[in-house]
Length: 133
Image (tube, rainbow, N blue to C red):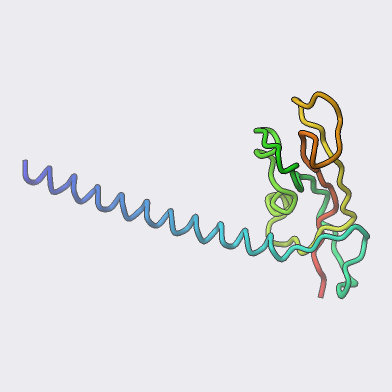
């Protein structure tokens, strides 16, 4: 019986180490994602000042802002614009060019209204690019 208790305790301690290691790994991945997303540049045109050579990675679309009084499951579950670029192309994304945005009226809205007063969110699309040296 003692031997079984010792084995179970050893397995429990080893399991805690695995969970701890996974938690550390997840925090490191989140920190790397946030650092990459923070450094992304958004521009409406097709040039980024100081970076004449760009390689297009592809198109990207995502929620770029919500009206402050509105919080629905559909828009909050959608990835943010920069996060959508990171999710699709990884840390290769340095900027998003040709950024276009529009206001999406929410399903519960009774009538279209001004952004900020209506229920909905801003949606953005553009082209993710990588800076060439």
